[in-house]
Length: 89
Image (cartoon, rainbow, N blue to C red):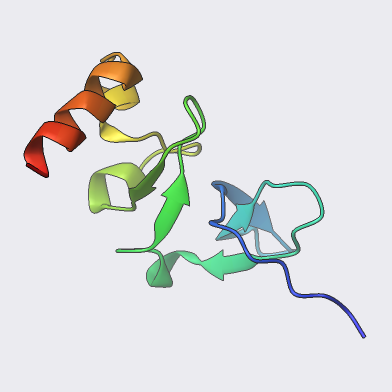
């Protein structure tokens, strides 16, 4: 029996099949997960630059390899983590 992987997926946009349909594939080694583009809005993913989780938005769906807000706007991820902590207080 196969063991189900438990992780947040690291999505990348790829073209699949003869019709070159756009799907989102998890790029973590050994993960066979794919999701159609229309089901990606609001899904949690891992940033391709810093490795932090974020939520997929319409803006992020335009990219092939989406990044979190901090990396997308060239902000230091450490500063973004500090901002997250301060907002929680």
